[in-house]
Structure formats: C-alpha cells, structure tokens
Length: 424
Image 1 (spheres, rainbow, N blue to C red):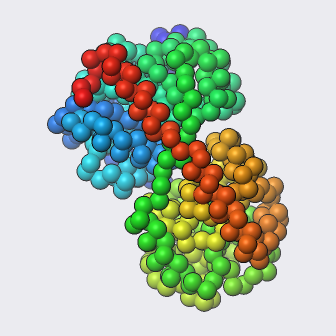
Image 2 (cartoon, rainbow, N blue to C red):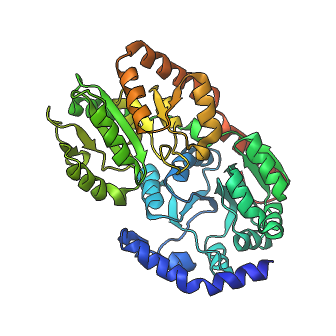
Image 3 (cartoon, rainbow, N blue to C red):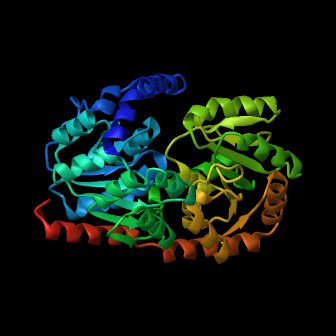
C-alpha cells in the first residue's frame, strides 16, 4: 500500500504545484519559503538538539503554546522547532513565540522531502498535533529512530471513515507511532479501531491556554475604544457565508445601541467582509486603524491577528464561528476561559465534546439559525444576571478540564527513560 500511496503522490505533483500558485492568488505568502515544502531549509539551521512539534495552522499553533512552554522549561538545552502547513499558522507561531523557537513548513509527504527534513534538523523527538497521519513521514521517522507521537489527537466519525478506506496504510502508520494521546475516549476508540496501539486519553491542550495579562489589558483598551457604555456582541472566527447571516440577525435584533464586532477566521477574507458590510449598508470601522468607535458605527471589523483573547475580554456575549454553517465550529474554550457567555450553532464536530460539555455546564447555548441567534442574543443582552451566571460557568468549565499538558509531558518522560533519545 505504501508504494501505491507514494506513486499517487508523485502523479499528483503537478496539482500540488498548481495548488500552491492558486492559493497564492489570495495569499501571496504561499509562494514564500516554497522550497521548504520540498525539504530545502538553507535559511533555518538549528544550533542545539531539536524537539520538533508540527502544528498545521492557527488553531493547532495556539493549542501548542502551553506545550512549547513546558518543553522549554523541562528541556532548556534543546531548541524547539515548530512546523506548519499554512502561512497563517506560521505567522501565529511568530507572534506567539518570536525568536524563542525555530519555524518552517513541514515538507509534503514525498520520501525525498521528508528525508531531507530529518537529515537537516535531526530531531530527537517529534510531536504531531491533532489529526496528522503522513505515512512516508512516519515511516522515515521510524527508520531514523526518531520517536514520533500523535498528541491532542482527535478523529471525527467522518475522518475515521475516510482513513478506513485505506485501512492497511492507516493501521501501519498508526502502529509506528511511539505514543498516541487522544483528546477524548471517543477519539481514542476510533483510533484503535483504525489499528492504533499505545493509545491514551489526555484531554484537550486548548483548556491549558490562559489569557495573558497583556491580552486582558488590551481587552480593556479595546473596550474603551468601542465605548464602555455600549453592549458588545462578538462574532468570533466567522467562516464564509456566516457573516451575511449574522448581519441579517443584527438588523432584526432591534438594538441600535449594540456594537457588533466581527472577526473573520481567515485574514485573506478581511476585505471581502468589508465589501459585504458596505453592500448591506452597515456603518463600520476597521480595528486595524485603532481609532475610537463613533456613536454611529454599528460594526467593527476585527482585521487583526493574535488578539482573540482581547476581543473576548472586551465583549458581553460571544458567538463562535464555523458553527452556524457546516464548517465544524471553531474554538469555544478561549471565550469560556475569559468568562464570557457563548452562543454556538449546531455544527461543532471539531469541538464536539467540549461543545456538549459547555452546554451541559450552562456556559453555552445552541441556536439553529440566524433568527434563533437574534432571539437568543436579545434575551442575553437584556439579562445581566444570566450573562454573569453563564460567564462563571464558563470559567469553572475551563478550569475543570485543564491538565492535558502535564499528561503529554508524562508520556515524553516515559519515552526519554525507555531510550537514549533526548538528554535531561
């Protein structure tokens, strides 16, 4: 199966190159550092032994933050290498860690490219976050005696069915992992059904992310910019098609004093959302201009990166994007960690257990469509005590589920003690 998979990869090489160019039409950054995607790393050179973490994009990179800090504290003689697949993930890594970590793109799963990657960085340990099963990369790590772990692993039913179509290849890849730490019991079971062994349950790293004092302070400044006397509704990490529905709900809510803050999930869509606001007749300002919000402004376009905790700190109610339409939902945990009431759509399979537990805890409510969103939001904004109770429930919910980072570190201790892979 592995040679068939690799043959197909080579046949798809023209499409891979076309895809890079096509993505660059909207994000020119896709053509920067393109050699790294094929294993060329002349500008990135480690000076110390390397511990490597792979975080595909923004969400995984933010989730990696507590783990990066724990690894730096536990293994200070090592250098952390953070790899990504998207420019926004790479930019997030730079914002979060600066020069404290090395960063580059993980190469595509061609044997020659992954060998060049491993030969260049010589990692003593590799950690793949969430759902990253690359057969050639995994095989090359095993051949090079590099322990490779899948951590914070999640596997939806849909993804499990897709991997099951290539059952032998998936099973062989999973069995070559040194350890697999799943977010939930359900994730662990699906991985075991696919053929994984050495699977444990660790929880979700995203619960270990806490808002920094700087972000909370920025949230206070944003609130002053927005107008402390106004009620603030935050539509966070919205996906394509959702903004139009949210804005339609705002027109029906009947609260002219309400300020809506919309933060699109992908920065390449900032201008498109601005054009939508103009077409729908909303008076808006861009966050990037950093100006006080006028009394006649009804929407702020959150066209900034790395400020989500500050947006949550500044709002009264938060809707979590990706859930009103079938995109799978974005991270609701950060809003809970700041103590803000959360509204979710029905489509939350990316955070299935966290979403269900948040609703059960009274920290979040679900809505089916934009009309229900408007109704639920109006009720919340008119009920200060209910908002307080939901916010307090969110704080307690997030605290109860912390500890995933410690469980990963314990797994790594076992790997370190079982072999001579990385020194103490």
